[in-house]
Each structure stands twice: as C-alpha cells, then as structure tokens.
Length: 305
Length: 298
Image (cartoon, rainbow over all chains, first blue to last red; front, side, top):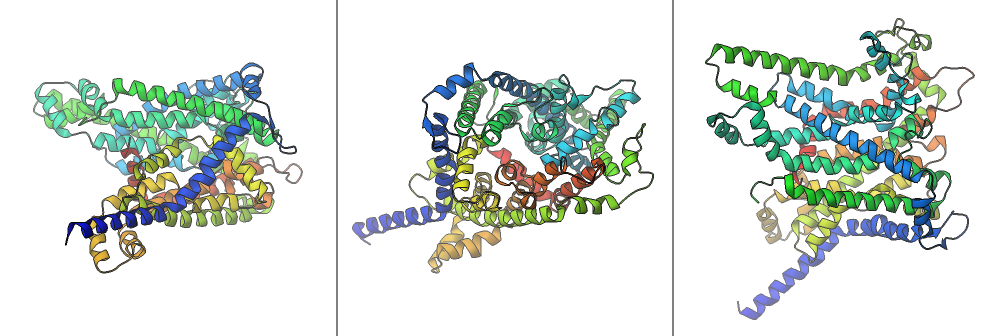
C-alpha cells in the first residue's frame, strides 16, 4: 500500500468517525438546543423585560435586577432563609451520611438490612414525604411530639409556628437525605480506602481516631467534596417540601427562594421578573460552586495527582 | 472514632483488656445502628398505622400504634373521593415512556460518545455533564412558554417528550462509563464482518450492558414517578394529574361535608410510596451500583 492511499484511507476513516459520532449523539444535541441552550438564552432575554404573558415582552433593561435587589421586600429574606437552610442542612446532612456509612462499614451483621432501613426514606416521593411529615409533626397528636412527651418534653407546634417551621424543614430534609445516595457513595468511598494504609499506621502505633483523621478523611475527601457540591446545589433549590407542607408559611417563615421564583412565575405570571430571580439564583450558585472548587485545592486529596 | 478502633482491635485480641474493649465497641456500634434504623423506619410504621385507622382514632391521646379496628376500607375510599386510579394511570403512562425513551436514547447517545472519535467530542461531553448542575428554574419558564405556545399545557406530553431528546445527562454518563469497559476489539471484529454501527449497538453493546440499562431504567422510573415540579407547572385539571401532584391536590380537595381526610391522606401516601420500595427490594444491586457509579467522577 503506498503512502497516498493510506492517507486517503485514514481521512476516510476520520470522516466516518465524525459522521457516525454526530449521528449517534444527535438526539442529545437537539435536546441540548431545544431544552437547555434555547431556554437559557430566552430566560436571559426575558430577565431584562416586563412580560406578563397577556401582552408581548417590553424591554426594561436592568430594572428587574434593580427592583429585586432594592425594592422586592421578599427578595433578601427568601435568599437569607435559603442560605440559612443550606448552611445548616448541608453540613448536618454530610455528617449524618458519613456517620451512617462509617457504621455500615463496620461489618455489622445484617448490614444490608440496616442499609435498606436508612435508604428507604430517600425513595419516598417528595410529595408523600411532605404530607407524611405534616402528620408526624402535628402539634397535638403527631408522633414526634408524642415521643418527646415520653421523655418529658412538650414539643413545639413545628410547621405551624414561625420559629419552628425552619428546624422542621431541616429535620425533614435530614430524614429523606442522609440515608440516600450520599450515604451509599460514602460507603463506596470508605470501602475503596486501601487496607495497607491502615496496616502501615498500625505498625506506627496510630490510634483509631488518628487513623480516621489522617487516613480515612483525606482518602475520601474527593467523595466529601462531590457530596458537598451536590448538597449545596440541592439545598439552594429546596422547593417541594416547603410548597406542600407549609406553602412558604407560616408568616413566610419557609418562603424559600425557589418558592419566590415559582410564585412570581406561575401565580402572578410575571415571567420577566421571575426569570430575573432565576438568573440571580443561578449566578449565586455558580459563584458558590466556583468558591468551593477554589477552596477544594486546600483540602481535597486526589491520589495519584 | 469507633470505626478504626474496631479494625485495630480485630487484629490484636491477645490481651484481655483489648478483648473486652472490642466487645464493648461492637456493642455500642450495634446499639447505635439499631437505634438509628428504628428512627428511620418509625415514620413509615406510623404512616402505615394511621392509614388503617378509623378517623376518630387518629386524634386520641396517647396515640395507638396498632389500630384498634383496622380499616382496610380507607385504601378503597381513596379511590372513591378523588380520581386516584386516573392519577396512577397517568403516572404509569408517563413513567413507561420515560423509562423507554431514557433507556433507548441515552444508550444511543452514550454509544456515540464512547465508540466514535469525532471532532469536539470531549468539549460536548463536558458540556453535557455540566447541564446536571443547571438549576431547573433557569430553563423552566421558557420551557413552560414554549409548551404553552404549541398547546401542550394540561397534557402529559411535556412530561414525556423531552425524555426523547437526549435521555438525561446522568444516564448518558453512566451508560458511557459502562460501554467503555466493553473492548473495542469486539466492534472491530464485527465491522470486519461487515456489520453496521446500528447492528453493533443493537446486537453487541446493548445485550452486554443489561446491568447498566437496568440501573438507568430504575432511576428513570423513580425520577418520573416522584417528579412534582413538572406536573405542578404543566398540568391544570385534576383528571390529568400524576400521583405526586394528585396527593397535593387531595390535601385541599373538596370532600363531602365534614368527611375527615387525614387517614385517607396517609393511605394515599402509602400507596404512592409503595412502587419505589417494591422496586428497591426487587433490584437492590442495580440501585447500589448506579449510585456508586454516580460518585466515581467526584
């Protein structure tokens, strides 16, 4: 075979790879344009307009953004509440998931039974979980206050009180969250830590707690980081539980940012302003994720890099 | 932490004190695990118990764990007071198409990403992965307007059709990872025999990927069955609701004057939670492997 025809054959193969490759991924490319890029662009444009569906959108420049940051009386409180929820539920959730994974990793008898017990709450549809917890947290005849009364504590009115609605939200998110996928990912991470490292530490006479701090935690830090990022993304978008259980109340105590977007878009049909709010949330999320990525250099340990 | 102490004790049981320490730790761990297991299961048991109670029994104090007169009729009554059968039918319909579309389309796309070296492949793949981080609110408003424009609001189509366009980033990622483990030599041998890429996809890759496909099917079903925001935005009339949206409507739906509903809500919650739990018990290993795969890229 001479060089020329081989080159022709190679470029023919490259062409074939290009054509077939794009052919096979074409459904995703279409979907990416139709349901991601297109809507994102439309949403940016809408965020600079006044659009209430009945009349065509009217360009208003940055007025929506100014209104959100300076005049919308629910903007900062709902943003603050969402961050409060995130700052408490994400660390508690991560710690809880890690604790459960560590327990399951002790080669306890019946591990799969316990794993199932911990995992099942995460399978409950969010709507059912919300309904169920409204009942569990009932002031007078709810299970939680019944159990509290056994140990002599008179429980608060939970979802019906401005003060206790947020802790209740966090409690619900922990029940549905800590035994779910996060715990399984931690468990896989723990099982992936090389036994040789522990054996080497034994020879050096390291104690259990020191081994956990100096071997286990650094080795699973990529997993912690992954779960942290997903946790933050999820917490900033918290919606369903609050929408069903409290409708954002009482007295807006659980009026999260996602509820604010939803009500502007689909209750007041103020599509322009709701798009503005959505983009602010997206930017906040982006900045937060980038900060986490930057900080991760300090504490996430990637083996082999 | 107790973890590593136990590991250590496992290996050195020479001394008496070490021996007892080991058993004490085991005891603590078991007590702790069992206590947590009970705490996690109590809400389910409570819901189930409430679902079988007479309405009056819900409000007595102290509450009862075992219904004094178990009333399975509650589960029937749910179907009488709201169009619950219709909601289940809608949910099954949506879930069926989502499972079929996500499995087929995500497999095809993953096949493209894993089997061909085309220009811009890596950039597109990273873009695809990054869509998983995108908050739903950024796209939902224009998507709503689009479906409104083509007259699909209050139909199940907005919940079904998008699945055919890509099949979900997470699914594509998971399937691609799996396809990469199948040696390319297989494909090449088939190409030499004159097979087309479609034949290789349908006759070689898909049959070899049953575990990954099962995982995708399970999560597609759960994602669709549990979806709340989509139905909430796209559906209006009670007849067209899915179970998740239906149960929210049931909370405030007009019933016969004075008919209590808390026990019925518990029965309905139980009914819509059941499919996920049954699926978990039937296919536990696919669940676990799927979740573990999702953590790999972390």
